Length: 276
Image 1 (cartoon, rainbow, N blue to C red):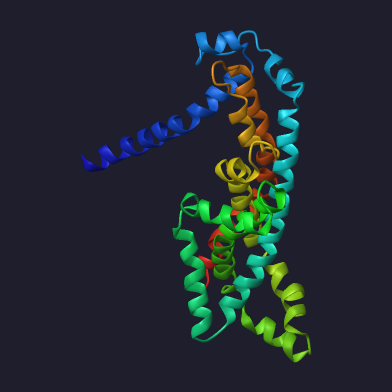
Image 2 (tube, helix red, strand yellow; image 1 turned 45 degrees about the vertical axis):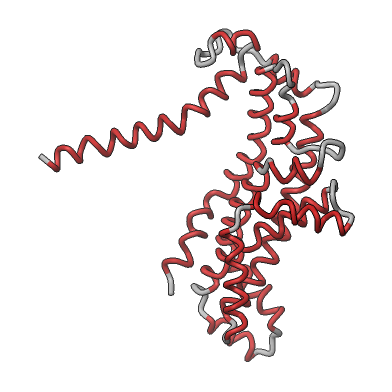
């Protein structure tokens, strides 16, 4: 009896969870290809006939809201994931190999950053950026993102570095190779799956971030794709067709990025957990 109950319950639970996750995606995809009037009348109905009018409206807006947001999002995400991958890999390698009390204290302080919600420290971050003259600027947003996400990158790289035999580094040292060169020529190429995982995770988080660009960039200093969707919604009226088209177009770049690196994704996350 229990075995029969388990047999039908698990597929049913999987079906319900799949439907729950797919429903928002369905609503976005089906409403992208409808006129604005049909969206409010039949939000869940299929687009009959389908139209690209909303997408054309977004791409040809006089204020170029989507294009400005796309350029800023690509710039911020590309700079951040490049710097985060390099800094996190070097720091993770050092903390994974270092002995003594101070590296352990540094690791504990660093990883405590994972437990602090970004919104809690947003005000002190803005005060620091103000004092440095970086508020309402792309470098200020990049600097804030680096501070938020370095602990996660270090956590992933540390687990993967421990799976790499230290004998490889010792052999390079016997050949007279410096520690810096050993890291870049021996260790870093072996960290490719972990690098892909860090780039995908942090790339998606930074691309989808809404609060930091809204506060740090401010209303007069540009926008990102997520803030652009927010600014496309007026106080007294909204073009829902344009909003859904913005959501659809904003998702495409990060989806392509994910598909390009996804084969290394799970391998990078589990690599440090399966080897001691």
